[in-house]
Image 1 (cartoon, one colour):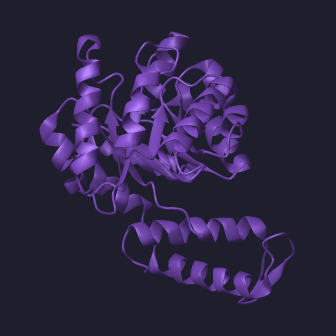
Image 2 (cartoon, rainbow, N blue to C red; image 1 turned 180 degrees about the vertical axis):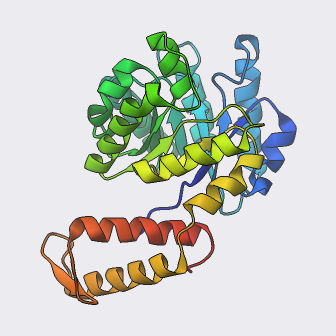
Amino acid sequence: MLKQSKRTMLFSPADNPKMLVSAHLYGADCIIFDLEDAVKYSEKDAARDLLAEALKIMNYGDTQIYARINPLYTEFGEDDVRTLIPAGLRKMRLAMCEKPEQVVELDQLLTELESEYGIETGLCKIQCSLETPLGVSNALAIATASKRVESISFGAEDFTRSLGAERTKEGNEIFLARSMVVMAASIAGIDAIDTVWADISDEDGFRAEVKSSMNLGFAGKSCVHPSQIKIVHEIFTPTKEEIDKSLAILEAASKADINKGGVITVNGKMVDIPVIAKAEKIVRLAKGAGLVK
């Protein structure tokens, strides 16, 4: 079964009633309603309750809805989870994730809540946000800490702040960290989501970084403004030739049943498991773009 596309993950503050009912209309694959950085300390409880009410009544269609919850070691994190799961939240981004133990703790809490509310075990998923040198260095351990982890994301702003480095448009200071996040995700068989681009006035710079994200192997990019969605989708949308080739590979692989290993030939070229994985990603992106049913 192909995973849902995460080309774009649009951040939206959870304390903004207007965005709670309209953010999904901008066309992002995913919306992340933010309870962490975007919400003042004094407003976190109110924002959580507001988001819970929206989740109960809103129909977001095919848009995947996440909440960026506060870390569980804060006074807000556990309440975020206990309030939002019964309200309908099934996907969350765990902010400032640094150790696999933090993932296990959230996993256990979700298991408890699934049992309490009659939710299918394992249905609630986690995206771990790696925003510090420790988090990035533990990327693989975090990515494999729970079967609930369906993706990991990189946060450059806090990462460079932790290093005392300057966040530049060229991105040399984050190249190694981005590569480590992508490699960990690849090993774990999950998606990697790239960091935000904060300067919404610099479209050329943003385009260059999105191309870099795709070339490094990221499955998508976090966005801070709706204007960025179209650009990401344009760059992350495969060509017709790539789509046709990938569909042929997947069809042949399905008939040959080589998911556990082996090699087949498609149109005169050798195809193995890594090639099939790449084809799956291309088809997933094509589906997200509405080019494949």
